[in-house]
Image 1: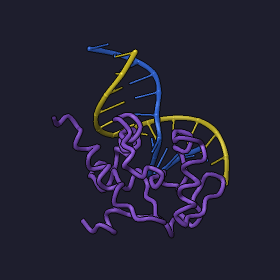
Image 2: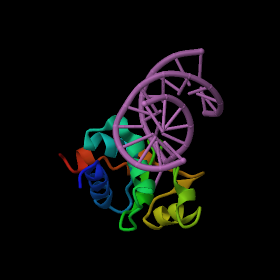
Image 3: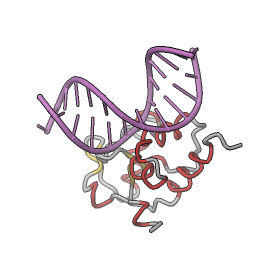
Image 4: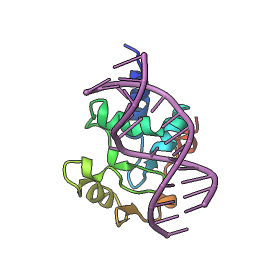
Length: 111
DNA sequence: AAGCTGACCAAGA
DNA sequence: CTCTTGGCCAGCT
């Protein structure tokens, strides 16, 4: 085991804890894991490490609140529709009031 | 072994 | 505000 697999496990664990109507960024998760320089690894973990359907990846966006991965979902609109279904407002592939919906694991989880 | 890619981020022009 | 550059870590060719 090992081999960085724990990194993914931590990422998934955090994403699963994201409440509805909220969203977080790759960098925030990376920072929470202590790899704030590894924001790419977080997103990479989602799509390259065997994409786990149990994970609400639609609640994870980039630091701008933009749905960068919408085209990687079942359909290019799945991500947006899901977020909207949770009470969020998406405009031009970006979350409106992003800072208001932003869910920081370091604060919400209070490490 | 070396180089490229990636669901990113921050800073600079 | 938009575009470009450098940096980051890990896996793949």
